[in-house]
Length: 203
Image (cartoon, rainbow, N blue to C red):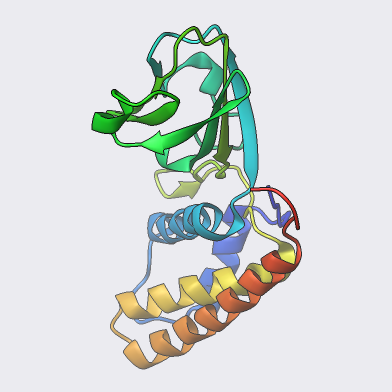
């Protein structure tokens, strides 16, 4: 994952000195905006892949709470929506619905909060998923440890988004629109930057 090297606490503290609003905005609100933005960028644009293998998996359904799926330090737990693809003993399974997955072989599907699959005598399941950073935590308005997990050169993107949300919250719509427009421009630049660094081969 990307790491700006800037702690979330210092980032928010610095941003609050720059955002001059009539009403004070709590740290918890800034942290919520920051978490939401990071999760969106990783899920929709960054899409960094990671894989985990489960030997002798339980038949038919793998609970998301399976110990093999425990996140590494600094990462969020896998959700079904994070899954890019699933292999069973090297065979790629097709993503399906719950109803169709229970009928058609070599498929995987969402079953509640679990991963269902339809293939017999599986010795190993490999799940390829899009990794997301762990949420920044908060205790009584004190921001926990953890950095802003985006490239340093795109911290202005984060600032523009959070400034826009702050001014929107206090009904300063013109100023909010200016910053959110900056965010949209910077997001397009970020998407182009990511595109130049994507692999040329593979799914």
